[in-house]
Picture 1 (cartoon, rainbow, N blue to C red):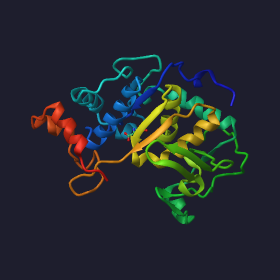
Picture 2 (picture 1 turned 60 degrees about the vertical axis):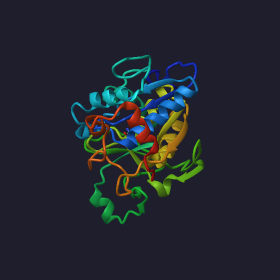
Picture 3 (picture 1 turned 90 degrees about the horizontal axis):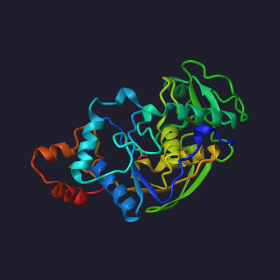
Picture 4 (picture 1 turned 45 degrees about the horizontal axis):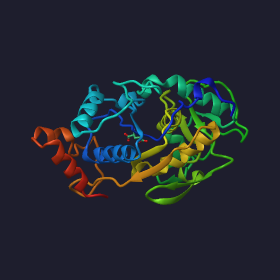
Amino acid sequence: MQGSPYLEPVARAGPVGRYAPSPTGDLHLGNLRTALLAHEDCRRRGGTFILRIEDIDTPRTVPGSEQRIMDDLRWLGLDWDEGPDTGGPAGPYRQSERTALYEAALAALEAAGRIYYCTCSRRDLREASAPQGPEGPVYPGICRTSDAVSQRAHPAGAAARFSVGPEPVVEFHDRLLGPQRFDLRTLSGDFVVRRRDGLWAYQLACAVDDALMGVTHVVRGADLLSSTPRQIALLRVLGLPLPEYMHVPLVADADGQRMSKRDGSLSLRTLRERGLSPRDARNLIREAPLL
Ligand code: GLU
């Protein structure tokens, strides 16, 4: 890809880590364990730590949640060098303020012939008997016109899909889990980078931000392991640097299920309200049962 002025990673010296919560509710113990591990991993290597707020899914954003997340992280003893409240050279640090960068990335992917527009509904996918992948239907390519993908303008109400075509098998090394290999044809098929409702997909926004912010070490929950090959595929086509990845186990709730912000899993707020000290909370998080 020819470098777009927009898509230049910030100049950095040294390692960079990050925590990238979505402001969709209070952080639970699982989120906090990941945050602490990412922070420790970064500080251990003397790195710069970034807090990035992933608020692109605006309908799911809970007002006030960003502030509560930052309060909780600080209360727990976690600090960051760059973030929405502190600023820094790679800002803005809220995804809702970075959409010009995602536009530039989409244009670059389009120029590389890797984007097509898709008007399929869930029902269309059912009717086409799309095969089920680990995360839902694998897109069977209904709207793909050819492998040399069209560059027509974004039609209203159409999703932009990334064609996994030429390099569908992605291999990478996870610092904890070891060698990984995914075939995007059976994982997701051509995946959405901008949704039909115009919202940016997590895969595009996260990949572009990690690269442009100069993140060298991504530490995140194991639920995102299968997102990584999609993000690597995008970064390769964009000619942007790849971070190293580590996916850490998730914390189990009392029923042995994965914690979720929505179903009222134990939040740090609850622990604070019960009078726990930050140190007790950190110990509880360290000893929490894992999935
Ligand atoms: N924003 C995502 C979440 O809260 C995490 C993204 C990431 O760490 O890559 O689940």
